[in-house]
Length: 261
Length: 301
Image 1: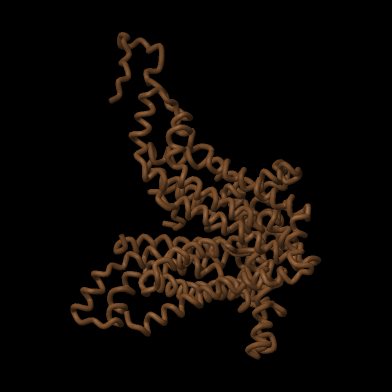
Image 2 (image 1 turned 45 degrees about the vertical axis):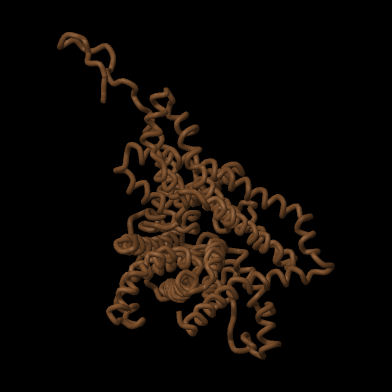
């Protein structure tokens, strides 16, 4: 490769790195301006709202993952095993959340579930359940793709027949044979879902839930340094999820692919 | 291999039991998914579709859609489309160059996996924290703004720049747009075979001719498709813009947010039509993406 070309590619890369790190550095530098040193970070740790909203979002994320797995794994399995002709329809439905962005989804959900006879949003439990349901829908594209890719890598027909001839029922096949075999891709999908849920702002705001992202958005008016520290914490959570996915994907046959079509 | 026993009864007598052995309930596995999708995705969207086709009294009308073509709402859509186009093109171009730099640009191999991890993080780092990070960096007293003013003597706010405007929003959106491009376009760049370049060079093609006649035509469906995806990605974004501008920028997602909050000119049916207009644009872009993605698979196996 010619010298000039190589320099040009290095320049492109450096610009990319700067674009990536300058905002993070700006946020870090701002958060460290609080006096005494690191007080922004000790303050958020002692902020009961930080703890409560972050754990609220984590619990919502974990419930989302559980419900999503319970719904997606049997569906993807069954479509691959017996109903390949349904595949395009199921895939289409799982892609709909890309067409219907969160703001539209929550708009529809509030209209459908805030009026009699389906006034789900009148109770705390109802609103929480609706939030998780919306997040499960958001997780469909990632979870379905993850599980489907995982299933492609194993011979589910043989596995199913072998289990059946040993007398296993469907629940047992799914739980003890299929699930362990797609564990890696399932975990990738799960971490991605967790990262998305913890950072999700639009749906949580309009359902008026005490989640982390809405809290992060509002805290700044009174405590700017804490807000900067919180933004970095949020970034760290996304980072951790992505690193876990990369570690999981290494050396496994099935890697999550978040592409459409 | 069905070995269901034939009914051992004389013709005419009804068999005592259905003959099918082992009736399978496994298909029930799909029902929860369909039910869930219906309840929390399809029905709510359908509610908006119906609402957009009704007036306040509940009679059928196309008035709401006609109202979308009033100048102020058209302007809102125009702003959204402009921001999405600019960030899709700029993010797409830069993301492609960046991916090409680490894959075929002769950079050390370790930078590639580093870039892929960064891109995974950055493409998911949208919303409130992203908006905040840019406020602390490029806001009026942001770190980078001050650096430019005091060290390089460039006063960007004095020159009319504002982070809370269209251009500001575009700069912020690029932060998740170009990493998404890197992630999706990398496999396509990987698919460009070395043999093709060598074959072209052996026949005397210049680098420009190779790009013009071989590489770009092969990559074009992927490039276009991914840029369309970026367009939709930016078009549907709400949280970042909301946090950055406090809900004071005239784009479609923010207009819908205002409708939901019941602010100015509250007309629920018009709100539904606004949402539908958005869904239609999103649907076209996602369909375009899948179509082009399928086309690109022809060469890039």
